Length: 407
Image (cartoon, rainbow, N blue to C red; front, top):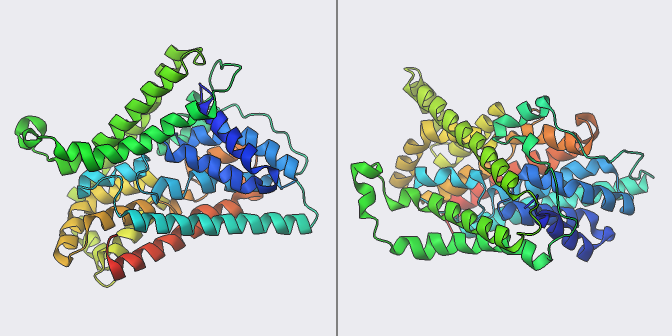
């Protein structure tokens, strides 16, 4: 999406339609569309920042609000709350709970709307207060950042190698918006068709044999849906942008290399979780965690995932450890209490957002580096839209789920 300039085409079209008078909303929506379509949040931040900088400069909105604006669109509701998102945060719970990417869809949409609404209202208010105080864009250099070893190490916890973002050579022409958005739409549509229509109709009894790991369709249907959807989107992207992908072989090579880090990152965290679960003292920890919330597994699950995400500085990392150590126990407890696994899934994914975006998080550090700003200048607004408001939305989700169940 980046090498073909499809991400840039989508961003410019959305920004062009909304204009500089709605600069914040335009940037948020551009980031949201791209991340919901499966584009890495790091790629989105790198692709959208130059457009956001030009738009904010034109609207005379303080540059310090750009990181929070990108974070709202890329790090929050499309990553955790919207049903069907191919984000890894939405994929990890599926084999543990036997769910699909569209688990608890209406609850996810409500949570996403609240998260987006509060973040958008905050950023709009901050821009209005800055204008009233006479603060404009400021005197800033907007040259793109050159990633170094330090940024690469910061992002390793999030499972992405930022040195693979910037393409060596790009086409001079942007693809038409229809061609650029087609892979994004295909991911979402095929994800639903596969998980809800096609795969459940297949004969999959062979999965229960030892040769295939004694598993079941429920444990793999969500992952299969995402893998096939993204693969089809990649094929469509190459087919429709063949002439614009000047270094196609290098693009495929970089994409394959970039996929290795999250695979090993997640695998190592699962292994770490297994070691923790094998410790003699873990039973005491498990009992203490499960007792939080007065026996409501939704409360203790939300707390454990969010805290671990904060400690590890990684949404996927905190989730992987929590589910590897406690996932089976929460599923058993939920079945005993009549709680839908879909609700466990959605609470888990939303709980990864919040404390994961503390100052030491790799995505936060990289976003600030891309924008050429410091924590002192821009982190307050990132905290509001990517930490506080997602936690408030999580509380609402747990409350609604406890009262009405999954829907």
